[in-house]
Image (tube, rainbow, N blue to C red; front, side, top):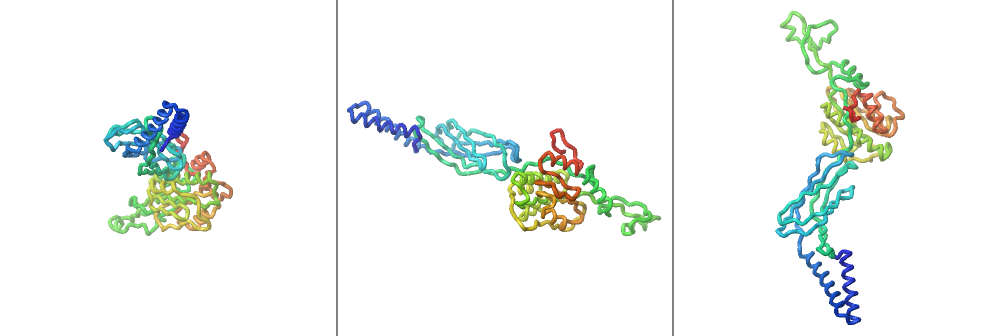
Length: 383
């Protein structure tokens, strides 16, 4: 197709030829014909040279979260034997515009690398490509545009902080002390050692075989059940959030999942009424959070859980502490779980000691530290 300069040259050729014909000026007529011939020649030249490029993409780093800046590397190979002309490349990036690149002539079979920055401004799936190619003749009169097939996808994970959870049977924060008292009040399930029977011991813990070989009764000594599980439930009810507070809610849920993984807890993620990922991995949970959205009204989240050993945390991320999702969690969760509510729109109505304020990031970090007893690292994040 003709470029703007090409249309201008064509118009000039017509005007010059007409004037030369009307006034009998042979030189102008020849000049107009020559310009017209040049335009036709460039059209034929552009159409006769096929573009055959092989494109490979790589994103560095492979896992990005919101707020980070990555780099997309393109490896472009000329699949023809003939040398290419200078090319203009356009790489569309879904939701982020695209990148414009200029490529010098490539010899047959030659490869070249090009890269551009990728600021991760929003979570979710990002699609790169297909790559658009614009080739022009040396005079800039004609261009040929072509789109190469093939795309590449990555998932931008929600922003999350490195937060600490109580380890073992407790911690220094309010939730840690509560877990310690809960653990000491349980019989425990993990065998630790044998000891002599003392008055008041549970008769069910007597080890009869060991007692038969000894002069005194022997009792099984067990370790109290520690924290083993972490369930994170993200309420996606639209009426609970503003657009900004929902993004904070997703980030808070991602931070909780990341914290549970760092503490080597068994993870479960509930997202609205649609997704219930049991015994999930951190990357699978992050991918589910990356593509989630508000929606679902009047439906109950699948909160009920099978009975299991050990204590667990049930973290409900919602707009307010008295939301329907929080009420349902109190009613349905296991008796071995301790409820923590992360309120992202308003903290009004909080009736529990374990409510974390997430109406902004600074309050979220401060409130999390107060509840869990985690320490703040030098970069302002919780370690």
